[in-house]
Image (cartoon, one colour):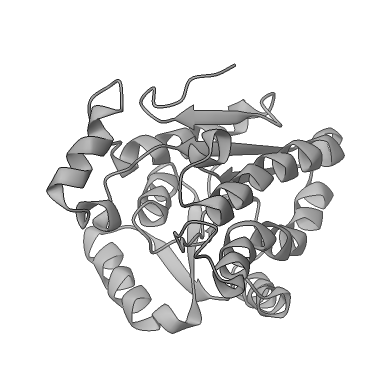
Length: 249
């Protein structure tokens, strides 16, 4: 397996993103966790946690909803670390409301972070991947991007768009040694889902055939698999990790 490949994980200090960072680090990659500038205190705290555990993970700030901010982030990474060869687009937010109650700001906030960010970030690094003849772009979508979800027209639309972006870009860069795939987690046990009231959480779990939420490590494992050099013949696909909540071809 290729060692010390440089990996960037956006949303890298979040519940799933931080575990993806650890997974990639354990597999021998040099890892950078991206975070929003407003989350600097949390990012520094997470960095100390990683350092205490012996994980070699760095942090870099950037607003994935802003193309200009992503361009500056890319310049910093290139100067300090080199060329990114593994990109995990994991940053995401929710603003859940029915369409009747949803505001224009609710709509655009989610589309900008969850979908437009794929262009803003990937645009900065894909040429470096094709030039070097190796790259992995892994986009984190959601089960609700496949099946839809009540109260999530913005989120479901954005995550469905992730699939279209993935399939199209995969065709553009396939001959250059770059793969582009997506992963669609179902409900995953993170600080966010742990805050869900117990009765609601049980209702959610009752719908999942395996009878539980995913552990973040289970999602990170799929990302690590797709990032591997031996996964070079897998591109343009989506891998569902939803415990059977939504099953399709």
